[in-house]
Amino acid sequence: MTLQPEIRGGIIAAGDGRRLREAGWTLPKPLVPVNGVPLIEAVIRNFIAAGFDTIAIILNEQELDCAEWVRRRFPDTAIEFIVKTTRSSLESLREVTARLGAGRALVSTVDAWCRPEDFARFVSAAASRPATASVLAVTPFVDDEKPLWVRLGAGGRVREIGGTGGDVVTAGIYLLSERARGLAATVDLPRLRDYLGWLVERGEVVYGEVIETVVDVDRPADITVAEEFAARRSVTR
Image (cartoon, rainbow, N blue to C red; front, side, top):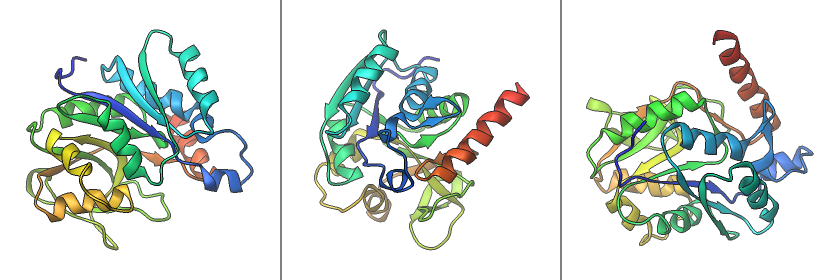
């Protein structure tokens, strides 16, 4: 797959994985496996499937071993690591996108598990939208304690983010316009979800593109769900 040249890729992997740790997991969250494949490997392979050969990844200061693991696992992929313990996912987004140069930026959270072919289809659809627009991956599959609901309008434009219901929920994968990236650097909001809602409220053009199945891997139960989807994929191939 060939991407438009101005799109750069980044991964947010600086969270502390609190809910997994409370459940007894001792591995850093990026190395928690789904069907034997660590989350960080799965999302890097998603980017590779979508045609990316350079990626910026932010890790927290307790995850230095993850960086070495990734370098050994992907010796032929140009990966820049940012090691910083951030206060929020929005701060992590700012750090990653600041390293990606001009143009649009595709950013995925490390815990947004989906099939590589689904990720690649999303990237292709999102890249076909106007370069001045931002595009969110959204899904009808809801398996989150606090889902971020999205209401879609004509042509897939996002009409509203937040509230107690909607058509779909956000999926942790974002194609941000250069303008939206600049706005992210200037606002003081507590969380990434607040920034996304703020973009829509102020009239920025934001679209939603559907990925049918994305699992937000925050709890042991989420690992089980993702592995069930992975097993179904193996059976149907």
